[in-house]
Length: 148
Ligand code: RB5
Image (cartoon, rainbow, N blue to C red; front, side, top):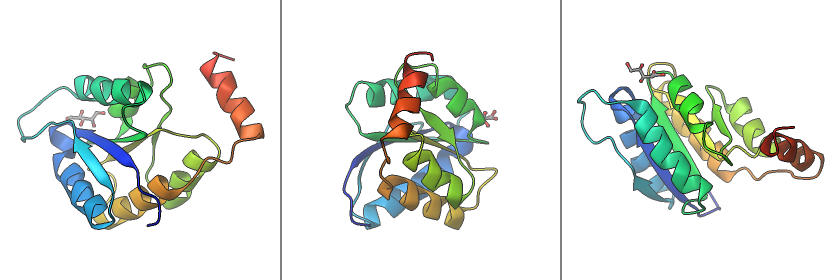
């Protein structure tokens, strides 16, 4: 992994184990992370974690965020309510790459009940290290930002 970036991670109880795995994994790759919670297996509400992480990414406090819940779906729906956030639910490496190259996704959403640990690590590594292509894709992303 060449690129160093500051990443904020968050999960609900259903995504806690995978989030902790990814924090350790990213650390071995020299990536600095912040853990926005949750920190226990006690049941909690994913929209609150998603909002907190998404607001910090949208404000530029962090370059990117990773959100984990049971499926990744709830986190993505909630995170995408925040202006400036492009959250992508990903469960394969090709979508991980394309969500950065073409969509400039700034939040990666993963489902602990959907994606195995090793695949999730591959997805995270590719996603963190892939740059947005810009050009025609920037025009399209700008259309999304300005509500088309
Ligand atoms: C929690 O049971 C589950 O609903 C949540 O983690 C997530 O999968 C929602 O989309």
